[in-house]
Amino acid sequence: MKVHRPIRRRVLWLGFVAVLVPLVVMLALQYRWLVKLDHASHEAHNAALAKYLEAVTDKTASFYTWNAEKALNLPAALFTEDRLEEAAWYFKKKSPQGARQLFAVSFTGEGEGQPLYFSPSCMEMKPPSWSPEVRAVFVATSSWHMMARKGDALEPVTLVVDERNPRHRIILNPITDERSHVVGVAGMILDETYLRDELLPKAIAGALPARFPGGGDDFDPVVRVTDGQGEVLFSTDPGFRGEAMVEEPLHFAFTDWSLTLASRDPSPGVWARSNFRLNVALSALLATVLLGGVVLALRTASREMKLSQMKSDFVSNVSHELRTPLASIRVFGEFLRLGRVEGQEQARRYGEYIETESRRLTQLINNLLDFSRIESGRKSYRFGPSDLEELVAETLGNFEVRMRQSGFRVTYRGPQRPLPALELDEAAIAHSLSNLLDNAVKYSGDGRDLAVSLQRRGDEVALSVRDWGVGIPRDEQDKIFDRFHRVSTGLVHDVKGTGLGLAIVSHVVEAHGGRVEVDSRPQQGSTFTLYLPLSLAVEGLEAGGREAGRSGGGLPSLLPDQRVEGPSQA
Image 1 (spheres, one colour):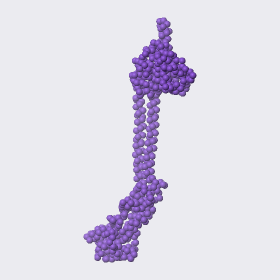
Image 2: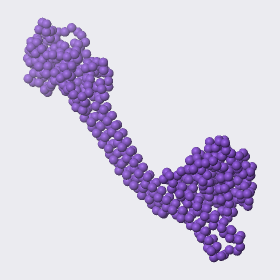
Image 3: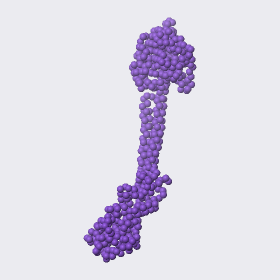
Image 4: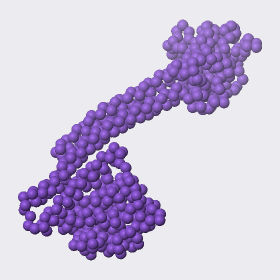
């Protein structure tokens, strides 16, 4: 079985990897898909919002283009025949909106290069007084004036916007004669107030829908207009200062102005990112649960395999443990049957061997029965007043022959003062002490000294068994009280055993409200101590312990040939 254990572990690890790799790949693909979906949804929604803002800018551009083409398309004859005063009639007839001032400049005749302003009150074209606005007109028309002086032919041109002076934005329409020479310019100075207070609010209300795709019923957008310095010129909600989601500059005129769209509530992009994080979190949680299930399943399988191996070792060890005393009993029984006995002394010694091995066999069977009862929950204890000193003495007496046969020397140290009678299950405590003594004999290695101590320590009674054997590694000391556990290193593993003795000891002591402690170091031996609370003391009763036990010395009446003043109890 040991040969196949590494192979089984590899199979478990391969199974784990076989599940983990597809899971990681699935999570990676899902994460990538969620990232793409989030990005695509965000981009699609922003594109939809930008489309509506573009509709607003298109409305403003169309408005200015249509009004400028209608108002500024003057006949070339007005400029070539010195009839520029008649431009007032055309301006009055067409009356464009959004213009603060209409003007015309002729590059021929006496008034070459001088702008004439249309005055609606008197229906005349008049030269203006000097002002920053007039200066802006001269700057805007100067390049066309130079072209006219050069006499260069001009390709057909559309309207031209001059925004070099943001306070005086001008739309120009170059006027050409039949030879495509520039003969003048008609222009309009735009009214910023009209754009801000009338044109944009109407365009926004007309272009933006009540509900945006993907925005939900609660998506309430806020549209703002900002100038080139970022100052808000108009807002559908003046008190709102939220961050803009999309931005679109105006077209044709006022190109440094921008429309921005924000939301009072979390934007669809924010909702999309929240959903993305939620989906990723749920996927990660699901993967964690799935991976945890796989780990638990593999761990359970590993534990079952380990338990199966431990049970196999247990059966093998129990068989060995049963075979050894049975073989001894059979051998000495055959000696007696065949009459190979030289006198009563040898017959008595054979009887002692048979009795000792029978006790050993009985202890093993008792361990199996106790373990079976503990596992099934049917283990019960019968408590009664007990003299713990006498109980220890009787148990050591039962081990006398085995100790002598194996060459062990036992040192016993009793309490300084008599112990009270304790409410105990004598058979269970004696069984526990027998298991500790049996372990001490097995794991003493080459050592042949054991020490047993019974002392009062505070509000507890401490019963200790010490050997100077192979010891137990520190990392194994927490596991030795588990069922079937066998220390896996050194000489400890080579000793046969069922792996039940210490588990039964722990259960018995805990049933009495006590605890078991172990102090062990490799190659220095081990000390197992049973702590029983003095709360188990029976009031009014005092144990009748032996004088030798009370004095703190050995037990000469119990082990006259085995007691030595050897290593002291730690």
